[in-house]
Length: 360
Ligand SMILES: Cc1cc2nc3c(=O)[nH]c(=O)nc-3n(C[C@H](O)[C@H](O)[C@H](O)COP(=O)(O)OP(=O)(O)OC[C@H]3O[C@@H](n4cnc5c(N)ncnc54)[C@H](O)[C@@H]3O)c2cc1C
Image 1: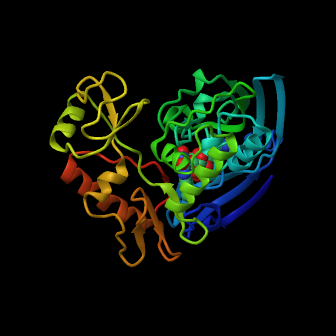
Image 2: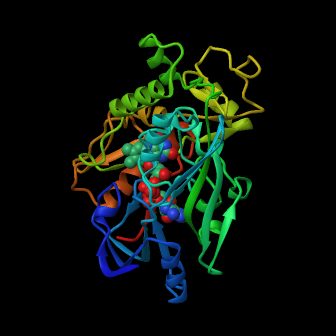
């Protein structure tokens, strides 16, 4: 365990904004966590950090920051169709995806190139291009910083939902994830991409029976064409969640903005005038729908906005970015301008996906 006071967090989050924490502590093993507990380091406010790709730090962070640097990688072939893999919280998620594709193990191939650590993956139940972590998660091992004990969580205990889990909610924030286990699929895995832009990309390439490698390559190419690279244009991916509208609010929205696209929750995307996949109608009064936040931002005229220090990515309006000169405060100001305009125009609240810590 390494400890450093008055440490810079700039290199530890993908927004790369200047920020100083009272103390930074590197954690490399379960023994380090036990030692930190015995020293009482969890008795004062603290934060745990992976690679900081879903995090924005404001200039001054009073919390103690634990940097998760747990390694470890094991897998067990249960039979032709089931592979269990257990990885340390500090392992890069994309390394795990690349490995699974190279071994021919399916289940996470469409989540290629999501930056960050395996330990952070359950926190917001990462997902992309039709796959989500909770579809393959077998277990999570975590440290209870209140009691000083480890616990092995079942998927049910993790309380997963869209971009959310127990670990993200206030009642679960005293847990530090040390490893995750996934259940990947072997020979009988059926590769059936459903995500519209992925399907379109595969069709365009004339691929009707894609391999895991095809899916990985096409998703990686789509992502590279749409998202800014954090090393040249610091960002944290989607800044906002896609808002979920239910019942009357959903009906009102659809009646008022018939041109707006929406997703039936957990089903697929609906294009105005086209039948939905569940009951063949476009009446969402009894449904929950997810509206692409990027579309809302684009239609209040803020896609491509650049205010001199921080902007909205021209190819994907969900992403806020800068050129290395903005502070966390600049980014939050733009975020709140976007939220105000979307609320005024569409009556919809945009919730931040990125976790923000610190003060001006
Ligand atoms: C360019 C770009 C594209 C992205 N695309 C996607 C995408 O397609 N889908 C998607 O879901 N996300 C996406 N993200 C967001 C991000 O990659 C994921 O949320 C990722 O899981 C964050 O990992 P991290 O290690 O960087 O987490 P951090 O930012 O370090 O932490 C995120 C949160 O998890 C908590 N945390 C971290 N480690 C632990 C731990 N070991 N135990 C308990 N809590 C912990 C932190 O306290 C923090 O609240 C993208 C980000 C970027 C920059």
